[in-house]
Length: 236
Image 1 (cartoon, rainbow, N blue to C red):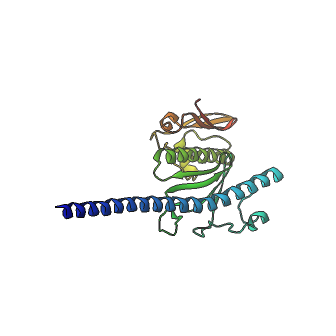
Image 2 (cartoon, rainbow, N blue to C red):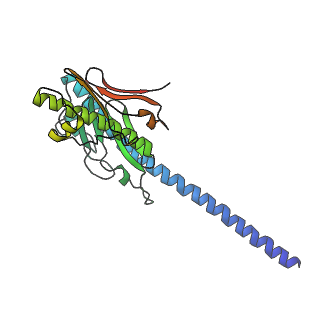
Image 3 (cartoon, helix red, strand yellow):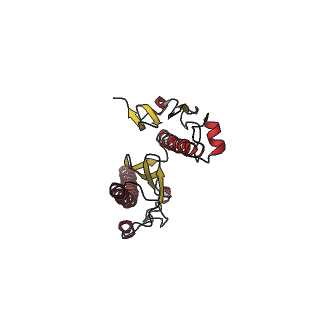
């Protein structure tokens, strides 16, 4: 009887020890995956930040933004430029109506030695906000960013329409008919159509319901105004 109890105690100790070892191993692997992901994204973020600063300095010197990244000596001198150090794909540079954005082309392909992939949907440098990482699981943050980009692209389209036809379009439908804009006319979060207001010398394009972005962002103003510029304000 005593031998059976001793065996049970030994077996229980082995089981408990095994559980503890598995728990520690899982914690270590999770930490390693997280560390590798952070290291990979930090390298790319560093590139984005450096390029963003160089483009900002170019603007301060010349009064305008460059048409691309490839004719700037400072950027050409960067170790990994103009490609992501993880995927070796070229960064995407876009001028916006109020500045510029530099994207990592595929941040979700950032992969560590353990085989884990990044969960980052967007990794970019915005001239207004600096480096912005957006997690692929954060739907509201993704929609919030895409709503801002829609507004910027629609506003740029309106300005182009005005330069071509010497007037503002009567509606967003008319704009999309005559001008190619890579943007939806609807907010991706609220699913409502953007609000377009105009006069002879002024226009405004607004998110119809910025409060729908407010699970994480207390947004109460989100629009582009031809006189005020891009307005993106949070509620205190």
